[in-house]
Image (tube, rainbow, N blue to C red; front, side, top):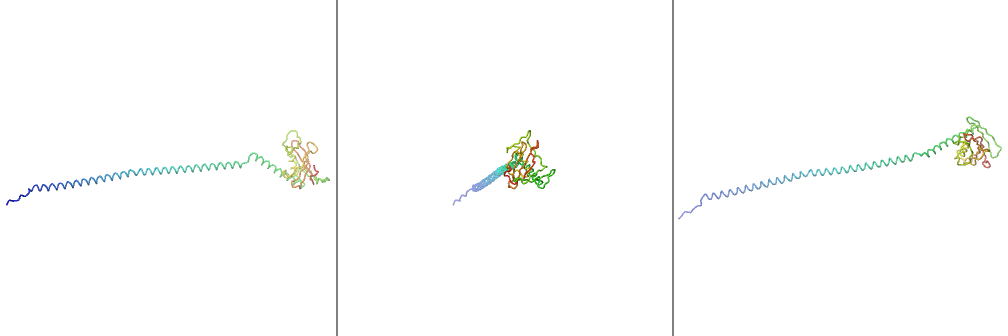
Length: 256
């Protein structure tokens, strides 16, 4: 019986060695591929982190710009409010100045006030003279009271202290009976001076010629009808009209 032939040992070993080598190569290739994937992942993740970090300043910058715009808007509103308040203050100041100017008296009002004060002073002086006349004594003069037989006249008073009331007229004097004239007003001033009645408190019944160009007679009564007077006036050159005699009347009827 013939003997069986066995395979040659070197070929078997070669096959085993080749298989082992292929496995090792495949493992190494797998490891290399895995390393490539890991390295790629790290690189990719690193780029993402870098881009996110790089974008953060833009966000901060946008936020800063937004804050600046908001600040500028706030400043603009504050400046607008400040301007409006300044304008209101200026308008209020102008209104106050106008009010003060409107409250200041004009020259005409001042003159009117001065005339009123002068008239009041004159009325006070006339009232004082009247009181003194009623008492029967006047500083620097004497008062004579004369009873009358005339039914119209209660009594006649002559006061030596009476003086001319002054005048604004110049040149040759002519007695005038125009109610708008200076001479007429000065006659009334002399009557007021003698009677003690303020012009606003009396009725002027009549002013006429007193017997010559430089004499006049004025008849007046108080507005309450309780006092009635007839005053005789004489013109004193450069000094004006002067009362020389005054009749205290019972009635004004038939007194002129």
